[in-house]
Image (cartoon, rainbow over all chains, first blue to last red; front, side, top):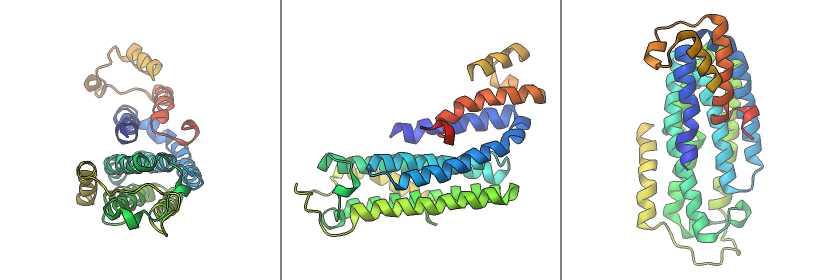
Length: 222
Length: 52
C-alpha cells in the first residue's frame, strides 16, 4: 500500500526535481527514448495485467501502466504535461492504495486472492461494491474522477510534442479500462459463488472510515 | 545515481540543491549524469525494462 501510494512517486519526483531542474538539455535529448520506454511500459504492462488472476497482482501491474503515463507527462517538458503528471501522481496515490485496501478486505474475509473464486459480491456486500466501483472507475480514468484530469492533461501535453506518443498512450487507457472493468465484473457481479460458503459481512464501520476519505478525495479532486 | 552525484560534486564542488540550480552543467556532462539518474529512478518508477 505504501509502496504503491508513496514510494513509486519518489522516482517521478526525482525526475521532475533533478531531471527537469538540473539537466534540461539532457531531458530534451533523451526524451524520445523515455517516450519509447513509457509507451512500451504502458501497453505491455496493461496486457500483462489482463492475464493476471491474482487480485493484488492486477492492481500492482496496473500502477506500472499508469506510471508510464506519468513519465510521458514529465518528459513533455511543457506546463500541461508536467502539471498533469503531478496531478496524476496524487490521484494514483489515492486510488491505488484505496484499491489495495479494498482487496485486502476481501482477502481478510475469504483468505484467497484468486479472481475465479469470487462472484456476486454485490448481493451480500453492497456498500463494499459501491466503494470498489468508485475506486475502479477512478483507476480507469472516467471523467469526474481525479485520474481523468491527470491523464487528459498529460496526454494533451504529449499531443503538443508528438501526436504518435499521445495516441499510443491513449491506447493504454483503453486497455486500463478493459482490465479495470474485467476485475470489477468478475468480483462483484454474477450469481453467488458456491465456493463462498462463509457468511459474508459488509464493510464494518472501521473499514468504512478507512476507505471513505480516499473515495471522497478522489471525487472532490475530480 | 550515487556516481552521478559524486561526479556533479567533483565538477561543481557542492551538492546543495539550491546552489546547484544556479550552476549550469555543460551539455555533455548533463547527458552522462542523466543516464546515471534515470537508471536508478527508472527502477523506482516502474519503467518497462526495469520493472520485473
